[in-house]
Image 1 (cartoon, rainbow, N blue to C red):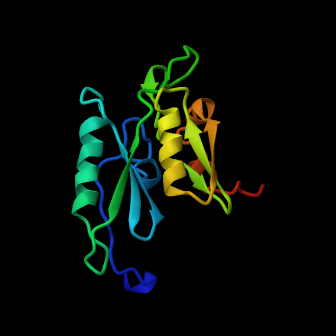
Image 2: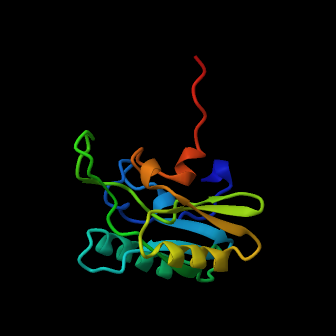
Image 3: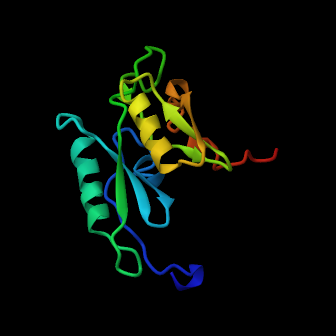
Length: 162
């Protein structure tokens, strides 16, 4: 931590069901300001993500910044089960890691994944509230999540040179 100038680390628990990375943060929680964190939260107690995300919410609610001030936590719904169900898929019937938290922030815009779910508009409205100076644009990511990630994930790597 000394080499990176880090004063504090916030540790969360497990990632969402279907995440092949063992819990990348961009599907779970994101800082949207120095004192504000958006946290993915499953509201259906019967959903496999419910307990995992409730645990992460409790951890964030108990966390404080380096000055001892609590963070503002804004919850973001989940899009329900998005599954690979095509018979030609090697991962047929597997749950895919669909999360509205996998958004990408650019200069004047936030590109947000949507999945054809009833919570799409609700998630977009929450993101509009936490990013009032940016346009929030929903992008259908059902086809993209088959690659095991969405918008934020595809902005992270550069292809290797041949």
